[in-house]
Each structure stands twice: as C-alpha cells, then as structure tokens.
Length: 362
Image 1 (tube, rainbow, N blue to C red):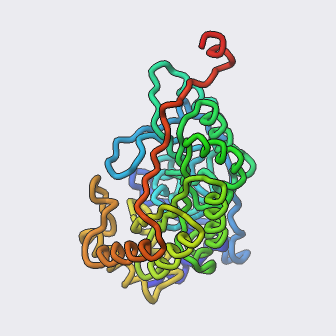
Image 2: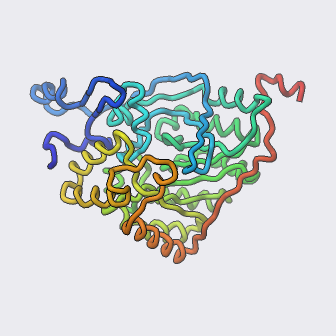
Image 3: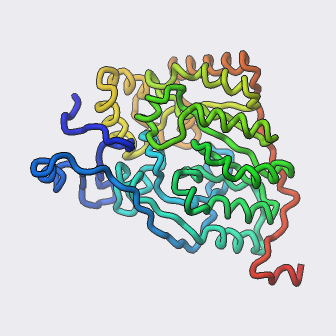
C-alpha cells in the first residue's frame, strides 16, 4: 500500500533519504525528523540543493575481476550523481560513507579534481600495461556538474596524450562538449561511446531519471557521434518490466535509423538499498501497477528482487526474460543493427610525461 507521506520531489528521483543501516549505522530517514515539524509550521520543505565537495583520493584507477563486465579497470571522477535515476545500481555506494543512497546520492556529490593528475602518474609507472579504461561505469562522467568541473575532459586529455583507449558510458548529450577530443581519439581507434536510452517518453523520463538529458537529446547525440565517425553503442538500459519495456522496439528503430552500429539491453537490477527505493518510487508514481512490476522482476531473478551472483546477475531467466530477448533480437534485425564489438587499439600506448621528466629520458 502506498505511504501517503511519500510524495515526488520535483527534480529528484528518490522520495526519501532512507538509510537502512546495512553497515551497522543508525537508521535515518528524511521523514520522521525535523521535516515533519517543519511541514506543520512552515509548509512543505524547500527543494534540496545540490552540493559538491572536493575529494582528493590517493588513487583513481579501480580494477575489477568481474566476469559480467567487458572491462577490468575504470575511472570515476565523481561520487554520487545528480541525474537521480531511481534504478541506479551505484546508489548503495553512498551508504559506505554514512550517506543516504536516496536523496543524498543525488544531492550530496563529491568531485575528484586530482583525478587527471593521479591517472597521469598511474599510466607513467614502468609496470603499467594498457587495457581500455571505462568512464561512467559507476556514476555518470557527464552528469550536470561536469559542465563546471571539467574533470572528464581532463581525463580524456591525459588518455589522448598517452594514446590510451577509453570507453565512455553516459545518459547525457554533454559528451558532445568534448566532441573535439573524442573525434581525435576515434581517428586513432582509442574510444567508443555508449549512450543509454531508457524510454521515448519525456514525461516518464522526468520521473525515472529527472536530471538526465531528454530521450530525444540522447538519440540526437548518438546521431552526431555517428556522423563524426565515432564508434557508438545504444544501450537500452535498464529495461523495466511494465514501465519501459514498451519502448524497446522504438528505441532500437531510432538507433538504426541514425546509423548506430551496435545496441544492447540490460535488465533492471535492484541491489541492496536500490530495491526499497525503487519500490517506494513505484508507490509514488505507479501504485496501480507496482505489484505487476515487482512480480515480473522477481520472475526473472529467481524469485528474488535481485540476483547478486557473478555469472547470472546480468542474465535474467524465465519466460519474461526470454520474451525480452526475442523482442530485442527481432528489433535489431529489423533496424539493421548487428552484433558489434569494438576492439580498441592498445598497441600505441606511450607513457605520459610527469612534469617533463620522462620527456628528457624517453
């Protein structure tokens, strides 16, 4: 049953600041504390402003051994994401820092201005061996604050200098701000860009991913990248049963029309705190179909809200999953989109200079 106190907050995805206390921290929610008293005395609380705190980590390149993803290293220039996608699997990372995976994740952000410097130092190490670096895999590297911080652009500058291959994943057309760098890297087979398109309905998008670029802008960005000769991929991600799956064929058709050579789909994942946040979102926006949505989700996840296991977490099962696969395959065939894997060039890597020292002895 829907909680009458949970209401949509304009420009935000989550309806609360839930802190389930997974790490032994005290439970904390936006409702039930000062907000209730403030609402009684002064009316509804004001909209939450986005704050950005500088974070200066000691390392910036993260490595993984997951068999489910096509990369083994990544750079995340930001922590938290203002896009506010309610389904974002990265939300639980805020809980590690005693922050809410709900509203804190999309309003209390952290930027890493020393990321380019750290990456340069890492790539310059004698023992470093290149493989494609994934950008935007945890939080979006082109979220709104990139407009002011420009950390992603600086990271691309370092990679271009080092001739180091990069993959970019984003839900923003802001990647076009760096089209000059991306085109130069594409000419040397050093970059591939994936843009995620979840639906074709701007109203649904505003509820689901409130501060992302509109779907039409994302498709237009894919078209610009194709025209510029950049390897591009359209990711229909995530596919949410009974919410966004109706747009699957339309998105693929549009991608084919503008010449995108590669497309894929990823089913909804609800790890840790994302599951209760998503259920809350359903109660606020789609209470009449919440039961159906979650029933299908559980059917493709072995009876659970989420499958966390390597090897199966990205591979849904059951009749609904088979149906989605068949629909997507047929849509790709009709759109003329085949299975395409971009093989970026790692052979031209050269260690970047650090304060000019390596230039003297190279």
